[in-house]
Length: 337
Image 1 (cartoon, rainbow, N blue to C red):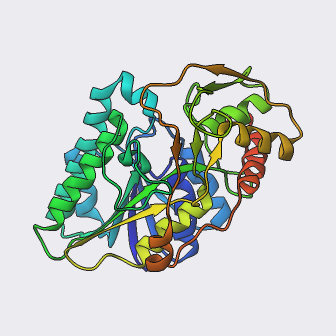
Image 2 (cartoon, rainbow, N blue to C red):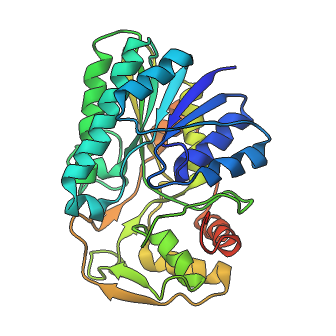
Image 3 (cartoon, rainbow, N blue to C red):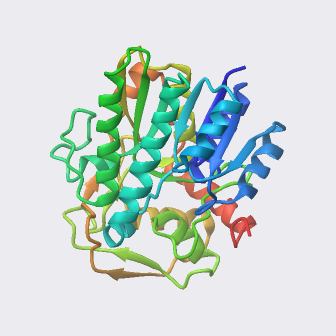
């Protein structure tokens, strides 16, 4: 049984990915500082799968503690989710993002190198493309992020690419994913942001249960069919299966593989709200606000490469994601608390 270390594994995408790993006979250890996640998510993962998840509460930037963990356990590979992730917040707090996201990766890879653990799947983002020249976006698109969050992802990609050249045994996969939404179909785990949500779907679902008074729609004057931003919304379960595919098919030695994980279809903010209203039967109040710094008009993936090389493709629709999100939010109006 292969043993995978998952950093940031108690979070939204991490917890769903761990379900896929456990169901495919991987042993999982999670490192998470629980700053934007809950240990309750992993307890529910254990109930859903009937399997044990080892949680070590620490910050990945803590070299001494992480090194001690690697001394105690042998890992076959690492999936690296840990990091701050809100575009708007990164504009307001750039130093926090550069420190957290880049330092954690440097510490992790130094220790992996020390203990001869060479397979790494990194949680990157479509924000590395910035304002793309072509839509849908292929992996060959120019890297030119427009905000500090995207900059950290682009910098880490370069760090990992340079690292792979230092030892032929490194097997690194960079997964550039688009906009994760949805929840496990059980309704037991889902997205549980701390404070006011930064992302659209939790804002919509919280407005549906009355936790938020309305959804803030940032910009209705973009060059899109209805003026609101268009994004590629991928169900989190499809996204989790993309990580499983990457672990199952590691990169060749001394090679970095890059894949978009998206649906290849773009939906506007208003289309998402309308779809959620249809599946939930609730009217979603919203208000138009000015554009946010760093946002772009349209962004959706060309997922062909992942389909051809990883054998991975999305299977769930926007309506599926809205239904699963509504089930999660209805059963857990206050998240894991």
